[in-house]
Image 1: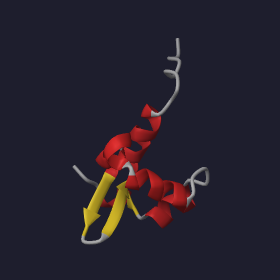
Image 2: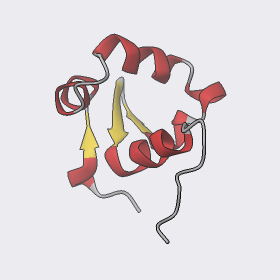
Image 3: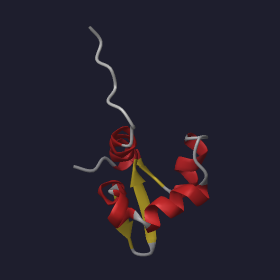
Image 4: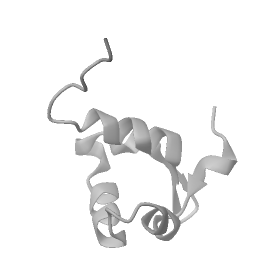
Length: 71
């Protein structure tokens, strides 16, 4: 279920996440079918919104190595 409070525009997400630029987000969105980001995207009319919670899941899945579990 989508929580509208978690939806961000490209500009908003880039402002909240300083490690990524608007251009990089747009590149990821353009290639969403091949990189798996499409699960985090919602398109309404001509606007694309990013579900922040799903984006964070996608980002976590990009780790090169599994995160060590706390013992």
